[in-house]
Image 1 (cartoon, one colour):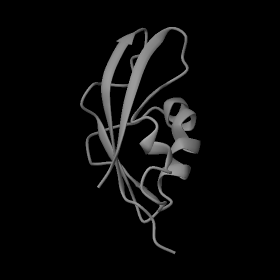
Image 2 (cartoon, one colour):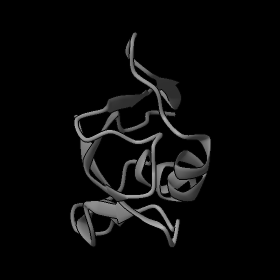
Image 3 (cartoon, one colour):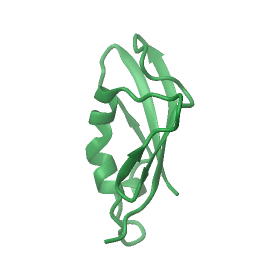
Length: 89
């Protein structure tokens, strides 16, 4: 089975969150998580977008994929606003 490769970037981080930094990038390649050296990803934020990532890796017809609806997703932490942008590579 072939999967989409994805790039995930934190594009906004405001509020009380101390674990997510703007500019942090990680990748999903061949359904595997890759975090570049010297970067970190909050496990709670990652968990909040995991279903979206799981859906986005599957190749679909143009206009039928989850990333055709939205490209940015927010961590549900009520004390912070952390926005992730998910893009196909």
